[in-house]
Length: 202
Length: 228
Image 1 (cartoon, each protein chain N blue to C red):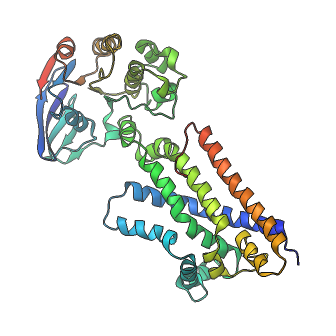
Image 2 (image 1 turned 90 degrees about the vertical axis):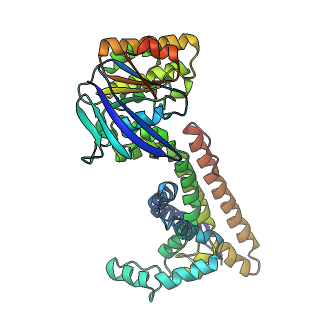
Image 3 (image 1 turned 90 degrees about the horizontal axis):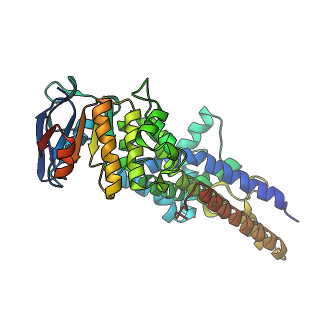
């Protein structure tokens, strides 16, 4: 079992509540915009504190309101790929990739760059990248931080069809070759059906 | 008598540099608290920091006299513990300049800290960075243009400081007589126009140089600062 999540959080007038248990592979959180999918990811990552509930990944408890466990964001080792790549604008691609590197890791920076098809971009500045390139760098940065699981928030948003295909292939390879549990947020039915072993409707 | 123009310029530069140097960490800390803090006294703190901007400088100087004079609580404490006195000393001129420059420096830095995207900081934290590392590797470098702009603005403001300085530490040649005070003194002397002109030209050149330096540094950092 990889993700074991049951969380509840009031945001303004609405209450985001979500619970699911999944096996390995890619799990998709599917639903319309504004349903609170991103909030669920943020709660798993530790960026948003649930009012109540429990978050465990791979058997390790990251948050449990009953027993008072709340592992800080920095220690959760979530590889979070945001909807807006959130590359650091004052660092070159290479430094962005290396920002979270720790320990042995899944792969070296050069391997990751090769795997993601961004090896030719290492000395560029983030503002000079296209949307698809930036998104692949963001995926690389998350992978190189030696994560225990990946959180992907609509990583295909704003990409044209050809770029979407590039990034989709990368995600499929991650799912099949790297073997990390992935929690994937999307509102696109076709995308979700292509990628996910488990689909959770939010 | 012909005043020592280079001595006056040197004193002005020394006073301004010390004022900005001492003020910089405090101004950045205040800017950070005002940009990011959430507590009850925030509005009051904001008002107190900005007070020297709106008070008549003479009043600021008088308040400094009350606090840091030989009978003032801060003055007595500093004299007793560190052996520092401000009265009629260039250090007092620097203190007056620092207090007057503080609000301008805090404003410029606060704007640039507020412009730092919190979502980038969240991303860095998911990558395992501690709050301190996030501050050193993201917040500070991204806010740097505002810090430079604030420092230059504070330096220029310090060079021009008059009212608080003359009230607090008087107008003593060679000790507290900075450029504006020297110009004021020269204006009191019959036939002092030549000296006034020379000092005024130096003032214009120094201020211009400060602005050019800040613009060049801002461009070098890859983006224009619109704080000035």
